[in-house]
Structure formats: C-alpha cells, structure tokens
Length: 111
Length: 115
Image (tube, rainbow over all chains, first blue to last red; front, side):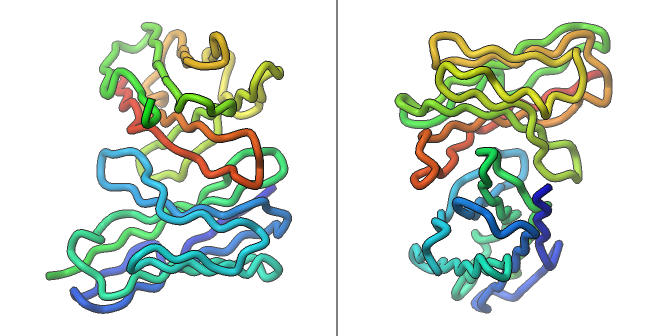
C-alpha cells in the first residue's frame, strides 16, 4: 500500500522567504505526482503535475522536483507572500489509478 | 463544463436520514473519483468510476454508502442512515483516462454535517 508523508506538517515563515515543502512516498511505481493547494473550507486546486518520466515542473514562483527512485518530491515556493498561506497536499497516482495523498503541509506566511 | 461541479456545497442532516451528494465532472473526463476528508485527516479514497467498467468500490467504508454514475457523466454518492462519523467534506474529482495525462481536477466539495 502506498504511503505518502509530508514534512513538516506545519510551518510559518516571514514574507519574502522561500518555502521548501517535502513529500516522500514508499512505492516508486507511480505514473505521476501532483501538488495541490487547499484553502480553509475549500476544495483542492492543482498546482503542478509531474509525470513519472520528468524531473521537475515550474509554474511562476513554484517549482516541483521529482526523484522517483528515492520516492521524494519537493515543492519550492520562491519569495513567499501572505496569499500563499494554505495547506499544500502531495498526491501520487499509482497503477490502481487512485491518488494516494499525504496529510499536507500547513503554511502560514507572516506579513 | 469548465470545472468539476458539486452540489450541495453544504448539507446538514439529522442522524439516521439519507443524503445524496452530486458531482458533475469535466466534459470528456471518463474517470470520476469520490474522496472523503474528515477533520484533521488526509483524503480517503471512496470509489472510482472509469467509463463503462465496473466501479472500484473498495474504499467505501460500509454498506450504507453507495454511488452511481449515469450516462458516464453525473455521479451521485448516497449515504443511508447517516451517522455522526459520516460528517466530513466529500470531494469529487475527474480525470482523463490516459495515465500519462492523468492530472486530477477536484470540485469544491460538499461539507456534510450529521447532527
């Protein structure tokens, strides 16, 4: 069974600092990995999708890397802003076509 | 539609009543998923529909839960004889069938409160 772990569970950073969020998974046989953002009381917004053959994806201030063989992904958010405050979820898609989720990184960016 | 649509957005029901939650996926997405998010917990897989294939129901927590998908599009999740532990946010997602392209798009969820 795929296990996805996200560290740290929660973090606070001052505005302008770079954010580094870590995700690890136990089964490297994945098709892709997806990072989501969830605001309180809201659904999930997709941020980045990395296929298993890719090493990274970038969108604006966001960059996600994938090391499939070691079962790790990292989401970098450059020059954080208060609007980046949210919970960030990592999910991997395996052969059963399900997404296995971590419990999230809860981020607070302090103005 | 442009996104995954779920209704209602909020539902308060009395213990023991039945509820129906609706999901309208993105047009052209043949895969549809239901997940549940309980307070302080991660997302829990419930059920997966792919085209005309038999659904993967292995995540349904009890026989009080059922789901159907009509015409390969809209899906309804039904919870019978609701219990307080059913209180959660129920999220629906859709995806293209191809694994290589398979990013998920989620709806905004239905927040179910059983009192």
